[in-house]
Image (cartoon, rainbow, N blue to C red; front, side, top):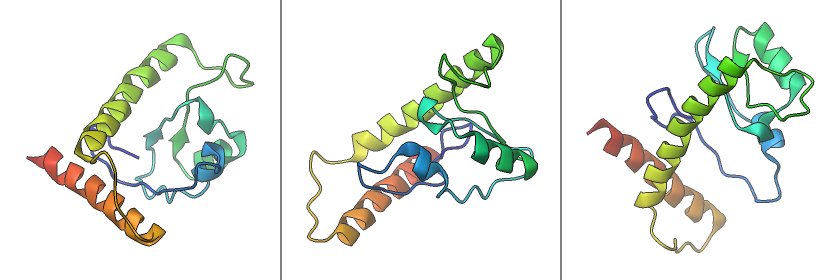
Length: 126
């Protein structure tokens, strides 16, 4: 999760077999009330959207063409522009990563990736 300025604020690692929709339920979403959160098409889960709306947080991922809750064109354009910020942040973090990360344990790998994300956040501030 990144801010509107592209600052990483929350992330976690999951195995490749873990679906994005399942991961959505693991986010803490410690954000102010009336926050707007968007994501790509993989994050369409109407139940989570309804629960978050009741909590005062608007979750509006990009919609698939066959969505039961289509969005107006202006909102799709707005979401696409926000997604560019997310993708740019991902690219900046990826630039800091080496070609390979040597780790003996899964925990060691997670720590190293977390430190790269932290370094990206600090790099963003300078």
